[in-house]
Length: 288
Image 1 (cartoon, rainbow, N blue to C red):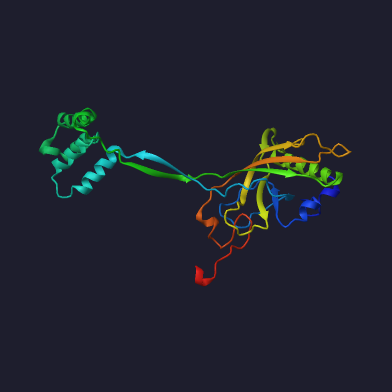
Image 2 (cartoon, one colour):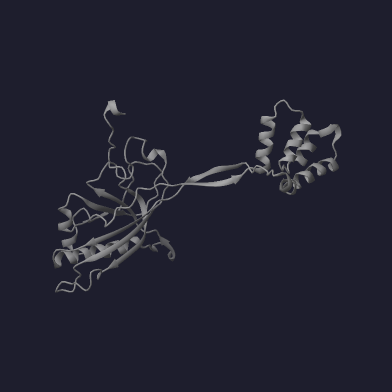
């Protein structure tokens, strides 16, 4: 990459963007899987580029993965033995059967229901449970499915950004072109040096944050992520180019997906923002 678009620290600089207080900082570095929650990841081959703010700031969103699960006969059995504390054993088993408990047959065998219950007696209770849906059609009673929610982790966050960049001159357009080339390079894998074409080394990881909006809730900070999409449009406002053929207005679309789910330690831990290392602000003591 030409020297006029990079600094000694590896940052790609477009002067007109750097002069703004509010801008987008996109950092990339070699893939390294740190222990979740580690505040200071070790980075290698680091590179930083600066873009203007996106056309529209995405939501700072979070989602939990939960799914419905019918406890069914298990829930019926638990509720019956919990709620019918003073009932006789035969009443409890009858309640399980009445609510569709296919487990009633096995339960009656294990407890010796009716002093010497046989397989035949257990089968009778099971058959009664199986007949409940048909009886319910006449009586207007349905089995309680005992639906519960199971927590299955947090969703991995995804972000989409669209940047519109208007270089001020040919030099800045060349710098932008070099920046885009570098992003293309770093979002792709490479052949493993040891295994050659039999294996691939992972692409670089990216983080995204917005200068001037530190500690502002609702403005997202993108933790270590893979870049999943990069799209460049050099004619978003028609064919507008400098004399050297470089575009005068460029739209760049990028998508990122974080590699780790969020936990409470992201905000607590050592009272630091683990994605940026920035100290979190606390309200005055009287307002906590």
